[in-house]
Structure formats: C-alpha cells, structure tokens
Image (cartoon, rainbow, N blue to C red; front, side, top):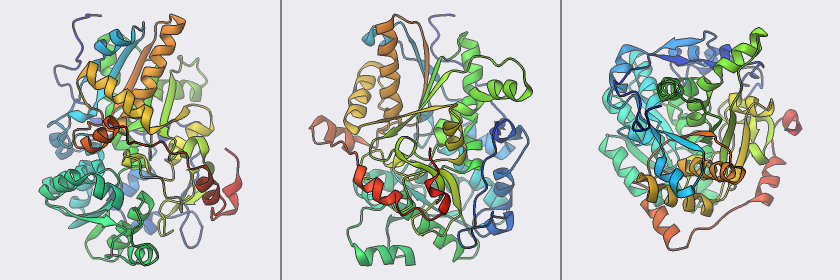
Length: 464
C-alpha cells in the first residue's frame, strides 16, 4: 500500500446502487404490527404516512436498488466521502493497529443523514406530496431533511426534542435557513404535545414523543407525509452507499477491516457502514459455501439509553403515544425518556428491527459507554486528527481507541474501521461543558426497569 495515500476514491467514483440486506439475512424480520389491531400491517396501512415508493423499498427483496439519477446528481455535491487513515492518532496511541474512519461530516449538513433525506424527499415529490413532517434529536436529521426539502421545493416542519432545541440553537437556525418550520417537542401544535405539556410544562422531550407529534401532524393534513431518519428498512437501505464506498476504498488501500465500529441510536449510520461489509459473509453462509472471515462488529450506544445492552427483544411502539406501528426490536419501552445527554441523536428507546435481529443472532456485538469518556476520546481525536466529532460519532471514536489500545497491549496488528458519522462544530456548547468539567454520566437503571414493566404486548418478556 502507498503509505502517502490517506484519502481514497480520489477519482470520485460514484456508487449507483443501494444494498438491500433483506436479500441475504439468515433470519426473518418479524413484521410490523398495526397499532390498533395488532395484526401484521399491510402496505395500504402505511399510505397515510409514507409514499408508495418508500413502502415498496421497506419490503423489497432484490439485492440492489438503483439510486435515481436526480438523487445521484445531489449526492455528487459531497459523495463519495473520504476514507481517512488516522495516522496521527495511531502515533499518539503507539498502537500497531491501523485505524481508518469514513468521514460523513464531509456533507453540506455535516452528517450521514443527507443520504436518506434526499432520497425520501425525491420520492415524496414524485408522488405529489407538498409538505413533510419529521422529528429530530440533536438536529442532524432535521437539518438534512430541511436541505433536501429545499432542493425539491417541499415545505418541512421539524419537531425538535425540547432539550436539544434548547442546547443546540444553531442547529435550529440552520434548519430555518433551509426554510423549515422548527418546533420544540412536546409542542402545543398537536394533541400529543398538548397532553404531555399539560402534565409537565417543562418536559425535556424525547425522540419517541417527537415522532408521535410528527406523525399526528402528517396524517391530519392533506398533501403531507412523514419522513423518518432511522430505524426502518428503507432508511437503512439508503445509507448503504456509505459501506459500498468503503469496500471500494479499502480495496484501493489494499486492506480489510478486522474490527468495524459505529454508534447506534436507531441504527442508520451503523447499518450504512456495516451491511455491505457483511454481504459476502451472509451470502456464503446462505449458499452453504465456506464463508470469509467475518470482522468483529461493534455497535456503540450511550449508557443513558442502552437499548441493545439493557433492553428487551420485544414488540413495542416506535413512538411514545402508540400511534405508529409496533416493531419487534430491542427496546427500553416506548415510555422511556432518556436523560438529557448531549448525544441527542442516540436518545431513542428502540433499535432498528434488522440490527436487533443481527444482535440477537450474535452477528454483531454491542457496548454502552458513558458521556464523560466519550468526550475525552473526542478531544483526543480532535487534537491528533483535527476534525471535531459529533457527540454521537464520538461513541465510535471511544471504542475505536479502546480496541487500538488493546491491540497495543497484545502487540497485535489490526485494521480498525469506524464511521465518523458527523462533525461537531454545531455542538460546541457540549464541548464547552466537557472542558469545564460539568458533564455528567447517566445510568438510569430504575427508570429502565419501570419502563420495561409497561411494555404493551405479551411477547414483551421474550429474553434477549
């Protein structure tokens, strides 16, 4: 390998297909259930929420789906994103490991979220939708959808989790620059929000509540649909352009990953990196052929919201009010309100059903890490590599550093790959709090136990 080359795909070779892991999974993903009848949901049931093209992608069986030309034209503004060898971090750690990071903060909105936002806005516009509603935690998803709606001349209303609305005012401003209406959630706009505010006017909000508000708004207004930034199959599908690029980039680098790491909230950036890397292994196992060595794959979540490591694998509502379909997933309970950590994008009570299945089958691992150590790792990364990670992405940085130090102790040469899913330049308030020593760690054990007791379905007590 040419040691002087740290940035690959210099010719801007475009990936033109999304990879559909449903084609290769060795297990069935349990179907979503209708929130009222509790029967498997039909495509017709989803039409008030999503456009037809997105619903078809949700249940698609083909291995690859072509990226529409109009979507590719917008992707070219920032794709392919760079794969960078973290040589200065390696030197600082004195590790024999090779550390690579895929830098999705290269996009105009500063994160991976544009990969699905542009696709969803395109499909909605093609079907005559005039307005989209959505939720956002830290603001990366709301920002991405706001940009995409501006590109396709759609109105956009964003319900932003109240604590993030307060903590991250410049994310709110950026969404408004793109033309979106941004409301703190819980809000007085919806029946869901008004009910919560009546019992607690200072409620900090949660992604589950914001989803309830956005869906209620969408189904109550004509020519309006809802757009989701994580969890569901079609969202994860659109993100696989990340991993497809990585495969080409690592081939050019002459390397293969031994360990693959990503942060998880609902699962989209993790899936985008990991699913294409799993493809050859899954296909070999499915066909009965000798499978290639599977890398160690680690999903990293906050101790404040540890759905994989502390949750139950059960049917649960995807939102707090129980108005969207119930999903079979690892969940902390749809009533769980996570502590107000700065990684707002990881404050979701559940996990993608596909990722939940991969974890249940032992194909991936999960680790939960605390807020303080996450920010310590992010500062070390910034002081060596220069880029400031988003608090969410810093969870992956933390575990990548841990694995590199473990390789040092064992004098073991490893190739470590992680997704730097977004930059943190609009999260400087969080970094200021870290530098002042005012951040706290949270492990809400009692709150999780209470929430899990209220899971709505009889299958809720199925073990993990």
